[in-house]
Length: 534
Length: 43
Image (cartoon, rainbow over all chains, first blue to last red; front, side, top):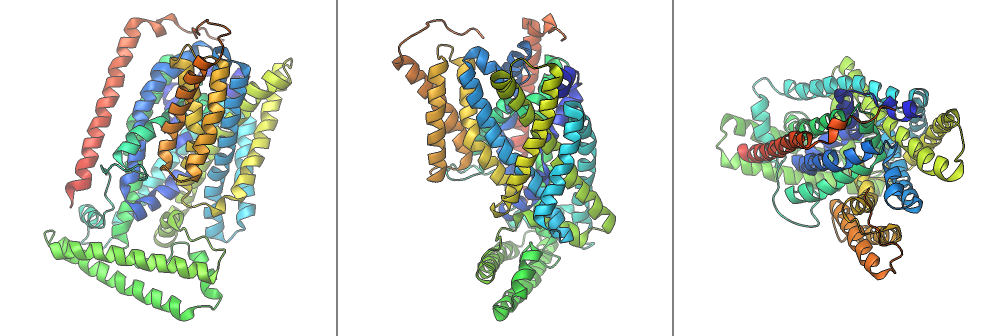
């Protein structure tokens, strides 16, 4: 069990670091993030600001407690601190959340294959998920960690080349700095936004506070990450891996987003597609409906492209030209209008069409502008990124199911071999669940957001349980259990009523669990006044 | 199972790691300042 689930707790710090990074950065990161920067600017980078702070807390408080108790999963700690009920509830919340997001990590590369090769998306989901299941079942945690190192190499190489090519494919007289100047005028270099608004998804405050709680919950309580750093040789080794992850994550995400921001300049010198999901666009056009309207939109985009190029050249030849700056901003607004009208017409023509094309922006560039060999390399990047995350997720889902539910509640007297075999079968089962979820993922908007929203619905509650366990020593099992259930209902209601941007749900969920459990603890009759020392 | 090495928990070790924690916070501060500059640089 020790070997299969935690790689004999023998991995060096660089394995821990690469494993933590690649588990977090799935294919979704590489497909969606450049698209996000293209449509909304680079402000998404602020989402990661809370992460280094969270990793400090994980290194200082979570990691020593987990390592000292020699546990397999984070939820085992909760039984020692509270009771088996709280452990099972938290493990189940994790399984529910992670089981669904594993589906999205399979769906992302499947989407590429189906778009590129015209394959059926459902069949592609099945193929993509199936391949990950095979090597995760066969090798357990060690296989996951070793393949993640190699996958990281392919990902870094591929993304670096993709970024280089964006600038290289610009006209000769337009360089890297010129491209940045153009993207700045359209507002895409907005890496820091300081306006405070609870409904604004990405600003420095939501990134530092909301992002901190999301990251703390993810790295401190999500078994797909806890399992990664528990496989380190010692506390120091795992700490080093975690802190270095905190140091490199923001620059890494910045560079990925920069590709999207540079694509904005790129499309000032190349024709901008009316809609980046060309398959959906073609399908709509082929219906033969609204031919005149489609033609009009294409003509308008063509005209905009001409003006964009003209104004961009004026700006580059004279960077102080205020009129060119104003024109570039106005052209961006006009282009957004054309894009919105395209989406409306698409919906009118084919009501079932997905009108979100953010996830196709980067791929559209790769397919149309990169030479064939590089297209292949970029496809491998997407595969590697997806597999590295999915493998860790399946590994965590299976180990949590076996350790926290099966071995603890259903079959307590099995042999080591029996539990390893059960882990393998449960990896297959969770793989099947993830593929099932992937089949329904098409209706979601930006995938990277969908995953984070899903996480935010459950992470706050889970984190609240752990922080109560660590810091509110007088709170006991019954109080925290009731508080967790009440909080989860409130968080879901908050999300459904659209009161807060999703990142804040992590903070709300966490604080509510702590406050409600404290209140209940004072109300409940005191059975055992002993305070936990764990 | 390998027992945890006793040096992991000494005050010296805690102090050593505290330096790295502060270092990471300073690094985050530097990154935020750089990104702020980047967002205003070409306007």
